[in-house]
Length: 317
Image 1 (cartoon, rainbow, N blue to C red):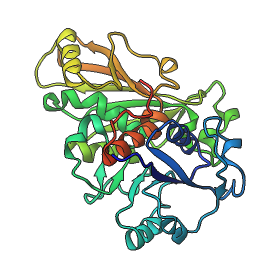
Image 2 (cartoon, rainbow, N blue to C red; image 1 turned 135 degrees about the vertical axis):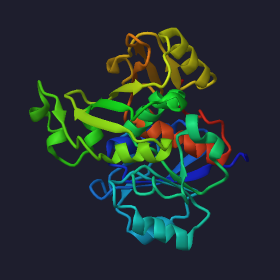
Image 3 (cartoon, rainbow, N blue to C red; image 1 turned 90 degrees about the vertical axis):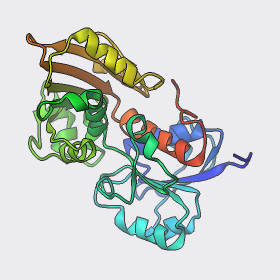
C-alpha cells in the first residue's frame, strides 16, 4: 500500500448502518471519506451527525449516475433491498474498477459477486471488485452452524430475536417503540430472506423464525441442530474453538451469551453448547450486534481484505 489514502463513498448514509460506517472510516488510517449520499440530509454537515468525523464534508442527494462520476475507489451501498441495481449498473459502465460493497440482499445470490463472510469465505476471495455483505441474521446463523455442518442429520432450526434497529429507519410496526414495548413480535416465519440466504450458502436447508424485541441493537440466535452421531458438550466446544482459532472477532464461550453484552461490540459470541440426552441434539447460541458485525464491521473487513489492509484495520478488538 502507498501512503496515499483510498477514497470511499457511502450511499444511504442516513441509516443506522451508514452512521456506523462513517465511524469506522473516520478511524481508518488508509481511507478518506469522499462523499456521503442521503436524500433526507442533503446539504447538512456530516460532522453534525457523527461525533467521529471532523471534516467539512456535507451530505449530498446524488443521482445514480453521479455516484459513479465521483470516482471513489470504494462505494458502499447501505440501501434497502431492491434499490441498488441502477447504481451498480452505472458504476459497471463508468468505473468498473471501483470496489463496490453492497449491504443489501440484492446480490447475495449472484455468483458473480463475492459473498463476504470472512471467517467462512475469506479463502474464496480472488480479487473481485463486487462484494455482497451477508445479512445480520444470516451471519449469526452461519457462524453458529458452520462448525457442525458435516454432522447434521436434518435442517437446523433457528430462533432469532433482533433489536428494532434491524428494521431500519423507515417507520413500520417492527421499529415502532410503542408497539414493541413489553412485546416480542414474530414476523416472516417461513421463507424469510435470510433463511434462503443461509440455505444457499451452506447448501443445506435451514429453518428460521425471526422476532423483533424492544431493545435497539443486538441479535440472539438460538440454533437447534440434530446430528447423525452422538456428541458431548466438551467435544462440541473444542470443535468450535478449533474452527475459530485465530479469529479475533469470534469468541467461543461456555455459557449461552447475552445480547446485552454484545451491543456496541464488533464481534460475535457463540456458546451454550447444550446437548440433549442421547447426544444427537445440540443447541448453540450466537449473539452479535446487527449494526456492526452484522453489517458495518463486516463491510470494513471486506474492504480491508480487498484493498490489502490488515483485515481488522479501524475495527476495535
